[in-house]
View 1 (cartoon, one colour):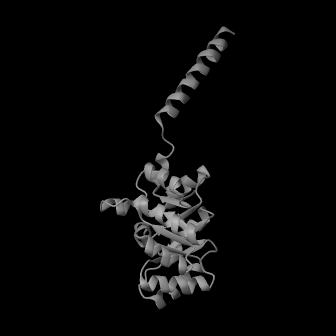
View 2 (tube, one colour):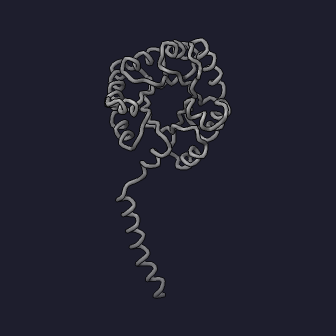
Length: 220
């Protein structure tokens, strides 16, 4: 499973990039707004840090304006994927942009039926939101499994991006369900490293090594 960071913060992206495990980035208008720069400037800077798919979302709500805005975003960098909402206008824009060879990420997906429409419109990525479904007492991970099954049945090439991942279990379950991509905040990615037995084992290894070789050094 590819790992994407769901952030527009450059400091977080630089730190994660140094680990060598980040495959791409997803942004949205809320994340861009937190950084205080226009979307074109911010995503260009992100593209300088992460060499992978960078989702940049339109803010237009009408299909014609979405298409125009999407074409402009796609020109910023070869790695830009135009993010569109799963609305009637968004699907229409997805179909038009896909026919132009522009890659799209259809976001705010909450049902298998919606995911089917996005695939038929030629979406490069579909973004079902796991955490937000959990918030309303639905099982968000069931949606990931449903979409993977539907796409597998018909050979759709649209990649399933598991979004709104709130904790490490969401990431693990997404990988087990067959999601192609998991996108998460920096803090969730950082948590994936953690296990008490790793810390305990490393501490014991170092103590054992120091006990033998520090003693040997003092004898010499």
